[in-house]
Amino acid sequence: MSPLESPDWHSPIQHSPANFEIRTIFLMAGLAAVNGGMGVASRVPTITQSRKFNTMELGRMKRTMIYITGFLGVALVGTVAVAMATRAGYESAEYKVIESDGSFEVREYPDLMLVATDSKMDSQGRDGSFMRLFQYISGANEAEQKIAMTTPVFMEGEIGKSDVSMGFVMPKEVAAEGAPDPKGEGVKLRERKGGRFAVIRFPGKLDSKLAKEKEAELRAWMKSRELEGEESAEAAGYDPPFTPAALRRNEILIRLKASSKETENGKSEADSETAKDS
Image (cartoon, rainbow, N blue to C red; front, side):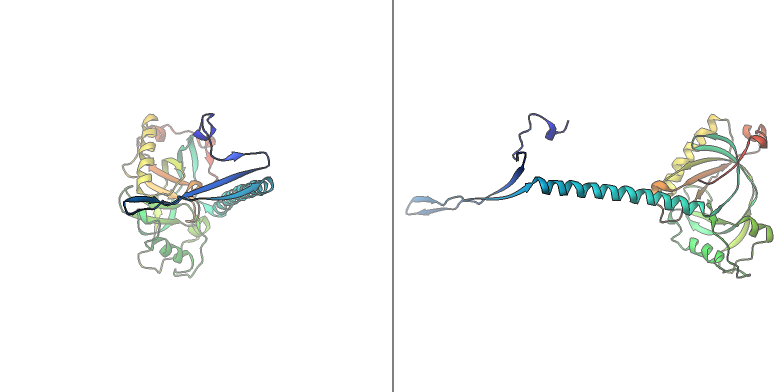
């Protein structure tokens, strides 16, 4: 119970069914003067300011708060809808789910073609890496071909280290026909070898600190499943920068070694699911 709800709390504000009055009292310091050995004290006047709020005004205030709350609720729903629609509008790299356990999964990926460039893990693409890749898919390539944006954006390299490789996944059709060579400096095409990966999915603003925390959680889960992974991990992000952190989809992926129990005794493809982005 808060102090305002306590029966022992004596509020200076007097309430009545029709109205209440707020009084602000300012005390002015009295002046004392000494004249001929006798003290003369000035009066200390009291100034009282009051304003009365009737029930009609209180009703308007209440309605205003309801309108504001409703507006914020609609804005939140709209933001979620826009984020989901934006993510669903991109082609996403395919994979098969071998095992699912809450936010953890074991997936099997095919070979993927990436256009990649060097980046800084915590720069969030503000170091120019994102723009270099965006210029490539916008036509800065030998064929001057415009290529659709896809998800996720991979950040490959040792998690927690500054230097990583940022990569856009080439759409399946473009990869099959042959992606055009980049024109931009520091941009290159390369293959991301397929295989099985342990994955953890989470929201938030992806930086090296959060990535390391989630990598540790993923490795602990792998240990409980007797899964042996590579020493390095990679990160993946699915949302544009304007997406609120709480609505973002981020992932940490660790490639499983060939000797891993799950890799040796993997379930049949009939039990696997083709991934669908959500």
